[in-house]
Amino acid sequence: MDSSKTEGPIVSASSQVDGRPNGSLEYLLSFEKLTVFVPGKEKTCCKRVQHNPAANCLKEYSGLQIQNHDPFYALDGVSGYLSTGQMCLVLGGSQQQKSTLLRVLSGRANVQDEVGGNVLLNGMNLEQSLQG
Image (cartoon, rainbow, N blue to C red; front, side, top):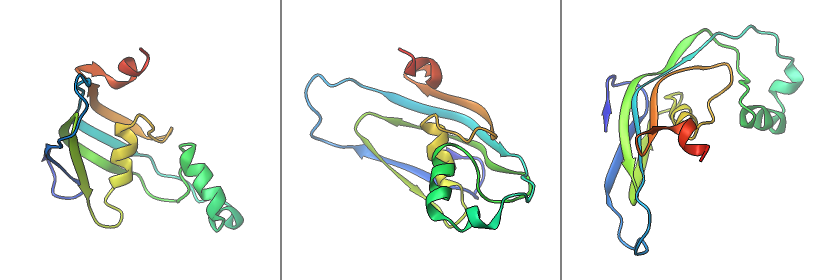
C-alpha cells in the first residue's frame, strides 16, 4: 500500500487468506490518488441535535456532517489496492480520517465532500461496476 503523506490512515494488506471456495470470483479494488476535500460548515446547528447520539448517528449514516469545522483535506493523494481473499488493516489515531477512507471506498462519501481520484473495481469505475 502506498500513501503520499505520513498523516492520515495507514492501509496494509496481508497475504492471501486460505479457505476460499473453489471457483469463487476474483475481485480487485484499487484506489489511485484519492483526495477528499471537506468544505467548512457554519455554526448553525442547534445544541439539542448535537448532544443526541441517535440523531447524530442517523445524520452520519445519511451522509450529513454533524460537526462545525474549517475546510480541510481529509485525504490527499492516497493510493492502494485490495484483492479477493486479502485481509485489510486500517490504522490511525483519532481524527486521522479512517472512516472517511472506508466511506469513499464503499461509495458512501458525504454528500457535501468533494472526492477526487479513482476508485476502481476490476478496472471499472466503482459507480459503473455497481450498476451491473
